[in-house]
Image (cartoon, rainbow, N blue to C red):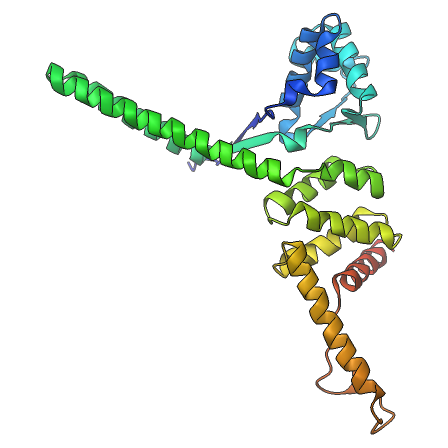
Length: 302
């Protein structure tokens, strides 16, 4: 029977997580440490749904249901939910669906195959240690030292990798793209937040480029996620990942447009429109492409 490649999730807390104003306020409340643990537990149960928690009407309300799920006092959970809601860390999408705003930025995961490979390396290292103990004292000491060196190298490598990832994340998080979107366009749901996150961390679009797409949508009074998504999708497909690359694309488009305009200003050989020519090809900008995608989506809905 084939093994399913299950995915395991965990929370990656930022180094300054407990230094944020919200967390300081939460911990200073009477019972604040308990509320903090409840918040972390709620994050954990929401990981597989990218921050969403659901009220399934198994209890009187969300607080009582979550208390049953995470084995905590109902009133303590209720106080935690009230605080999170007041501070904008918990938003309500419907009577049955709620969203923990910080979770999408904190999700870490590992597939079962990756976990098996890691455990295999650990077992191999343990076997090396076991074999070393069967030899004479000097060799045993040498092997133990070598093993510790290997482990230290692995640990250092993992720490360096995480530090590099953290540095890259910090670089990409000079501003909060989710807050910026909501300030210019509107409320984000969990799926939309994840899509923006994927454009930055999977497609490697710079946050500044994502910000530009948001600005274009807002400035053109297209305040909907579909329009922003169409622009970003077009850029990602064309390998445009930075402001510089997008500026270059726009310059090339403007040059070609100017050339066509100049050509049209020359004495016309006929009254036949340019677009009827056999080799004519219209090159759409990202904005035009986004408008086309939005129109297609509207037609599909009709």
